[in-house]
Image: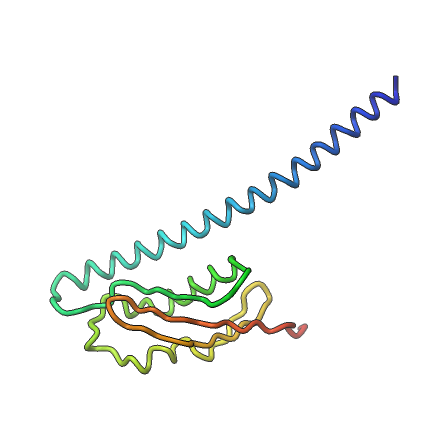
Length: 150
């Protein structure tokens, strides 16, 4: 009788372990989706505030949206973090008139920067910038292999 109880208990514990691993992965996926949605909401709130201020007295073409495109395959969390940083750096252009901007200077805000995310040094290189009512910027991150200890 003891052997049956031990086998049942072992099976129960193994089942709990497998279930925990499965739901842990699902939970991580849900958290990633939540972070994406929260970043999107924060971006839209910021953009809405600045656009309302700019549209109050302006009739000319203004920047209404910042659209960073991070050219990175695979690491979605890193890509989201870089998009968030890029939006923060370029937020100053929301609501600004196109005629008041120097299009050649905009890429230099980001190009050549080095950021550290999750103990990874990342060098940012701007490939293309498109300016209309949207400020679209294409960034290729270059991830350094090892961070020096210390």
